[in-house]
Amino acid sequence: MTKKRDVTAPDLAAPALLCAVRACYGGLLLCAPHRMVALGAGHPAGPRAAAVARLLGSRHLLQAAATAAVLTAAVPETARSAALRPGRVLLAGAGVDAVHDASMLGLAAVCRPFRRAARADVLLEAGFAAFGIITGRCQPGSPRSRGSLLIDA
Image 1 (cartoon, rainbow, N blue to C red):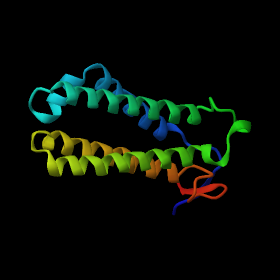
Image 2 (image 1 turned 90 degrees about the horizontal axis):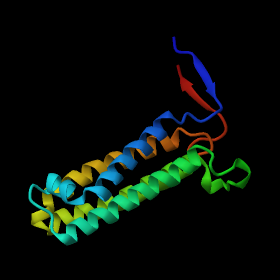
Image 3 (image 1 turned 90 degrees about the vertical axis):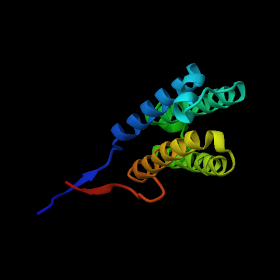
Image 4 (image 1 turned 120 degrees about the vertical axis):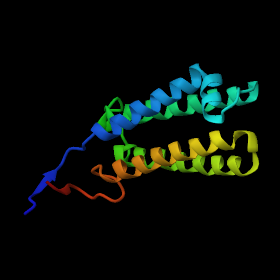
């Protein structure tokens, strides 16, 4: 027999893990772009590929920081609009990841030298997006969660 428990406060352990992993990945892309591209592509990165890796690393760091700010209540509850609830922020981040994923699928289709790196990034971004959707939908106040959340214990 499963017993139901009422969860009124958001469980932020999983979203915090997502932020930490995203920040680490973004930091690696920003600080060691040549090595990260070479690891993914299987060949040395040129200046353009390294610049793109730095840009993507910056995007991941900004997304992790923005998500962490909302999750840790760095944005005061009184200043939050409905759009800044943790669930909505996680779902918006998942949308950004899905768009990035689509662009990497396009890159994999047209750019043979970076096909391997693009496919690896597709898998990683799909994981980020899926994790963001799952954790975002579990947060109270998210579009799919109204009021308190009942979870099987």
